[in-house]
Image (cartoon, rainbow, N blue to C red):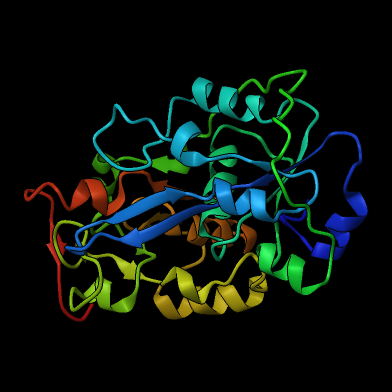
Length: 286
């Protein structure tokens, strides 16, 4: 099954039984001291304009376990599945995800479903911007509450799709594993941009910035060339990270789409790693 869908193809499917269209947008902005990102709900923007019939799944309320000590920590699989069920996603659903922020948050929602074992999910190529550019219908005003899924999805977690700090630490220097930073080149080098508690990168990691990847619309062949240039080898296990696991999800999605089958997102990313001075980081040219 394709992992993406074009705006025209989605338009032809709207209203069909079992289809759930999710807007996963979250707005983010740098903290004044450039040590982390701050976040705001995109609910008001969703109610201003959206794909007809779509549902806003606000990760800030539903997909963030705030009892854990880093931002955007995923809830337990059962709680995650329940969050999706409350927004209409269950057994028999076909899911399409988009966002209005360049694709990272849509990819995060995709990767969350992938992690709990839900497979009938696609990203909208080009996101909401492409939908509007195509002149397709837009709905405005307060949205109706989502209908819960009649048959909730029973999670079948892919444990290998999420990495923790212990796995990342053990992977440093392992030639069979590529640890890849999805932040900018200057953040990777520690020369500028938001620093996430300490400047630089996880020791030994590669860099493939998420802004190069587009919004679910990069051809797999083009992505494969970027991955090769970044030093990611076919057959390697890849652990993607960023500041809080969001841009990393865009990288992970593109790896999966291009044929890598052993990919994880480091959920804590630098928001966890950078806080612990005992965990190795590097600055300067890679």
